[in-house]
Picture 1 (cartoon, rainbow, N blue to C red):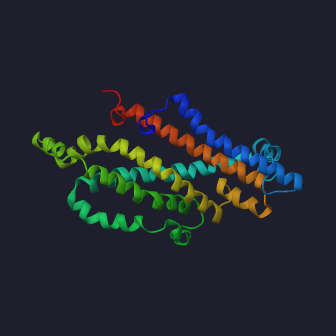
Picture 2: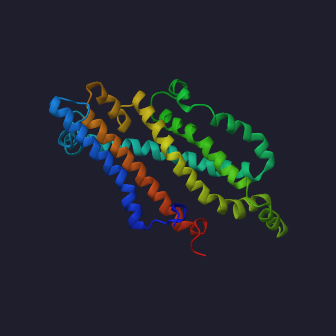
Picture 3: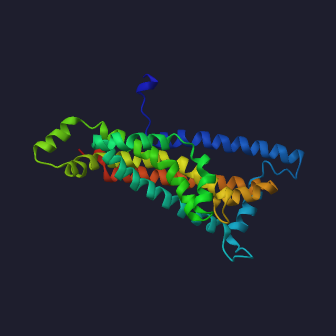
Length: 271
């Protein structure tokens, strides 16, 4: 059987997917042990025991100044900013993407503006946002929204614009107005694509969040990583990076589950 025709079952996917991760962990452990044999005080590649010891203090012991559990406080702060930014961007992508995709006059008016904003590097706008909006939460959330909303809008609009013209003509033949076409025809077709757009935006959203927290924040996963880097505290940085990766993977799995349960027809299921 040719490889292009070979299908992989669920257990096979689990094994093949975990194999590279386990290999990377194994290689890291070998390198860490070698470095510590040569220099027991090495901080670049900490041993698992050092990471467990450092993280236990952040996870289980309240901070002496704030009284908070630092790790969980950082996680909550970052997730709140990320959730708010993703939520606003999703609403914008749905509303603006639908009307741009289905209404040619709106597409001619707003399409160039959305495209122009989408190609601007969002990090370049960070100083402007901090000057205009201050160093509070608004600027951090705004960076996430500006960074991902235009791309999501273009994705949704392009998908809606590519819908078969026959669907729109049939709806109008049955007496549907423009707004009824948007709500009854375009919206159901756009929802699975919107979830896919959110999945694709998760990575950039985390980048913008960490960047904003690193520059101006007193709490958050990005803030903690950049705070301890001056002490070369890789025993904290590596677990924090791994935790961010786990959170992102969990969000992606949740979105896939939601899409399959809510829109099985978009995945070739539930005929």
